[in-house]
Image (cartoon, rainbow, N blue to C red):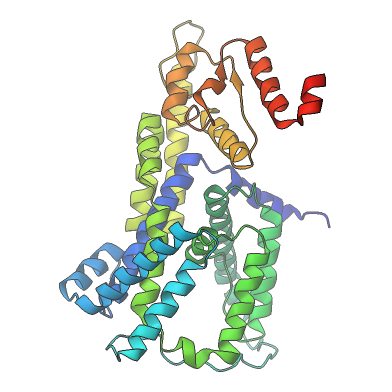
Length: 388
């Protein structure tokens, strides 16, 4: 099916600068963590413009039992991840903690009663003045599209599944929103929190979303009473662990060493994401990236010759991602011909460390080819290797 022109316009989200995406991801991780602090401490919390102040208020009324539950969930998840990455660590941790809490009758806040079935489908009522709804509907559609594509972009950066299809994402979210209206639902968007948990739990294909939906359907019809007794602190522990994995110290260190402009865009986007609003943060982050790009362009304009400063080359991060993705697929990467003036930049961005072995960096072509052939000969049967 041909892509519609409206969908093609939203592909521009795919070109959001790398520091903006990483700053947005770190900010989301911090928000997810802070939002779980009240539940982790056994307090309801109060509405406040910023999550940081809400979390600080919950700290004052902290309780040891919910904190112990959170610690237990995180400890079980860490232990299971070391045993095998294929185990559903979060599910097992929640099950263990819930069983113990029920057996000991621990006074913990639980999820509570859930509906035992889905609402019957019905045609929505259209007794409204559509002219008054066009503006709000357009605003909701724009925000939903941006958040969904940002969620997809974050998921793409967290995994090695390759690029996402913006057209398919928007059409799918639109159809989901239309279908949900027949069941009394609200407009749907890509959820960064659930997406992050999905990716960190091993989800790599569209089948993971199908399994997620089927699992929720089973919960509604068959396990509502069981899920109702799950402690909220246990869920907070899972989300806190996921949020902590989204905020990578190695990534932050690399971003701060990449260059002044990239580091500034990264910090600005992250701070505004936590303090104000997700969409505002992305907008300001893009504006800051554009400002620094224009500033660099203005300094480079003119007919004069001078030595280039020691700053990252525009394609360095893409090279790092390419090498990392290939190595994860067991493809040996050999690099030839990096100039000495660029070597330090590539080391700081992790290009060299992403190689399987330091000896895979060559200055001349012939030794690089011979080394590549040696890898091929070692992977061949002995008889074929002797003939070659």
